[in-house]
Length: 183
Image (cartoon, rainbow, N blue to C red; front, side, top):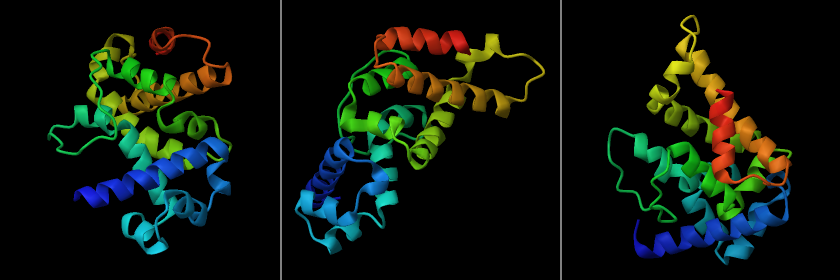
């Protein structure tokens, strides 16, 4: 992607995240996004096939620096924010949620968030798989590994939902401890 394309993409992401802070995804239109981003309809569709694809790409952009860290092949992708965290990957992820980077909490807490959660869980599953040794001593021998991974992934998501529903009163470190205590 050249500089002009990156700037256009960034403007669309910015408009999209601003709108997410004002209304739910299901009530948002492409027209509102392009008007806020000050781009044409053809430009929008040159970057994103649909609103849903835009949401998928936003999820990727928000968390790819964490999810890419577990990939066996290094990525030369430019992330939308730089991050030099050295915490566990799960605490790192919670800290981004705590900062509410790009209004992502609206996506977690929204009524019609299943699409976002589906994208998020796919990346999270890979993160859990790559860090399964962190949970090895807690796993019962009779449990299938795939079920164990699903349990850890779901527990993380539900821990985050609980934290959001309770007004993010606890620190990211406490939430990470709760998560590890539950699995």
